[in-house]
Figure 1 (cartoon, rainbow, N blue to C red):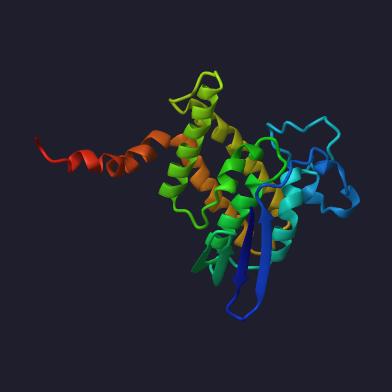
Figure 2 (figure 1 turned 180 degrees about the vertical axis):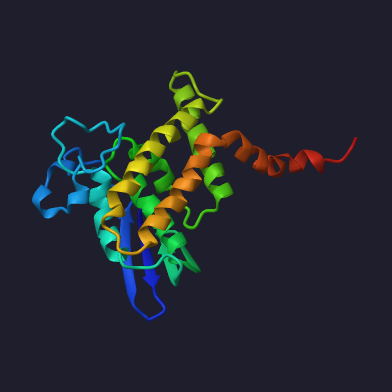
Length: 234
């Protein structure tokens, strides 16, 4: 599925980005074109402490390769400015008048989840079922729901399922290390704050899975118990 983001700025200028959420993973993506890449794209520049590609002959960070055109496009933009954004998929379109920070948060998250990074690629199901401009509650609900579906298929395949979500918390703990290093990686490439604040906003949502998942789920609990509360007494 291809997802198209169209940005329209107050001065009438437009920018368009297309992300293929089902592209094939390219194991050689990080080994090509080192000379053509900015320094911050190189794997050893602010490399993640848990990087699984270290020492494997990879010269460029796969997610940085994918983010480079996006970061370059918005490196001199302010996060607070308002933009009109239309997100189109083969099934439907979404439109919102919002801050560049929120719009970029949504797009950056999608690009990261479709990258060839072995850690971020675990988010591929989230990308395939992309929901633009998701709120924190929606992010939590989708993260947990998709993880539980994965556990159901693992159970059907004969594996032991993780109904307690321990693996989800650990996965996001590892992703937090990636997030922190990625922010450091692109910091030097940005003249203004649009990219940086968008990443921080995305990281804040992701960290809620690591540090306060149970509290976040309790906030959603009432919407799933409403049927029981409203059930007629017999």
